[in-house]
Figure 1 (spheres, rainbow, N blue to C red):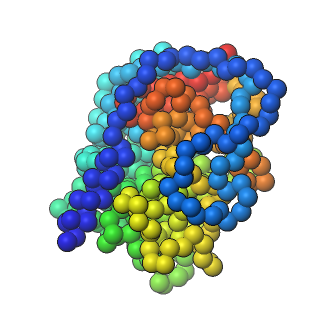
Figure 2 (figure 1 turned 45 degrees about the horizontal axis):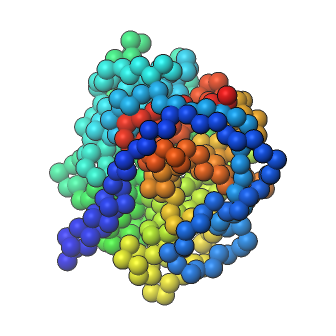
Figure 3 (figure 1 turned 90 degrees about the vertical axis):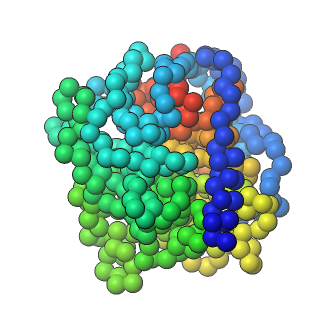
Length: 413
């Protein structure tokens, strides 16, 4: 029976992850206009008739960028890219799902594979995932990356670190510093995004592995599945974590009750921590992450099972002691990597949040004020690409990668 449940879950996730043929649009000039807000960008019917907890929690008014911008494809030569880190010289260090690191410059030239990484389990949603540079990368050239690590008993989300050689060809002294628990025989919901906080500690998102057997572990403080964890550069629990002295919890846990978070970033002005995660059929979430808080999965959700049936008995969208999402999508955005924008290139985008959308095939731009979403725009939707990650470059441009292997640059015209 357990194998039947796994197969159903795997089939539904692979269906949602199937590739979409891209269109051949390569550049676009935004129309000029004076209207600040428009109708909500989502026009399709929601999967459920659930009522939101507060006004503006979903389907907020649309906005339109007034500044003219261009975008183009820098390369189509990547293979299932997953994460991007911007090197000090402006080049991009990119993970490919099969276990390869590459460097791409602004001209779109792609390096040979960088060697020295440990083996990954690249089945379905697994593989080489997110990455981040050490805050002192300019002097120590240390890179951290998340990946699904294979074992005799299954796999798990792990974090490794190593030193990128000066010739950019090899990772030296690669070492796994953290492993999520428990290990599970599955191929879904690994999470896998990384970010450093201002104290030099590393935050990692971890999925709950999708299966009905592992789903409840998102609420179990003795498991790291369905969590955001906060660790040192050596993989140890950060000493001031909310459960550090709790004997009934893993000391690395920072927040819990997550389904499959694949985007995480700090607000550049306020320093608040934000994360996006996949719901099931509807109910994708944007959350303001606070230490020790419970974000509800699988007890509360605005989504349905892929079968169309409610999640849980009874079906709940709110419960005391559990956080509400700041914003949710139904139908889904399928949110992957995200980034806050500095405003260096396009001033009206300053402090806006950009989220790479997979099944939605666009990049979502969210205007956030007072920790609420007040406007939403869809960028590059004509491209019909599954966007996997988006980051800001050194000169105010945005770079985005797609599952089909493309690297886009978006910049002021």
